[in-house]
Image 1: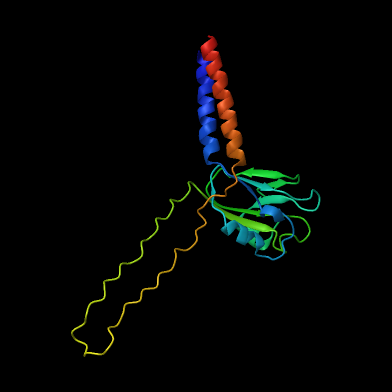
Image 2 (image 1 turned 60 degrees about the horizontal axis):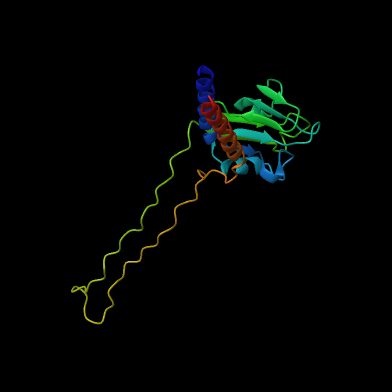
Length: 198
């Protein structure tokens, strides 16, 4: 009976961990390479929202590139002398286990100077979705007695712009979550079978 409780607790922990985690391939289809522009990875990062437990996957050619986590100072100067971590083998998966700004560079050749560097802000939780603002109401046009006859009544023109696009939307990729769900269902069925047989 005790073993079943332990397995149940582990399954519940797995469910909660998998429900929040998203896996991001750095650079998407471009991967982790010499970028076409120095801003490529900054633009990529700004189009995503990262939270604790998300995973960054750096895909690169072994020997041509690598990925190192560095300090802000090292990131700005492309300094490769004091690294927090270094991965030489692709794919390099890095779990985001703390909030705050994280800095990554490639330490080979002039990769960092050419823009192969990434700064991301890791949040504790996803920000709440913004609630859409309803368009302002326009008062119905009334006859204006202050205007002489024959003069058109001024109309109120209100131009509304759509709310700005936000980056709080999560990617639609559900691969890891489908895997987690399958794992949870399988383990739950196994527990149920043990419970029924016992």
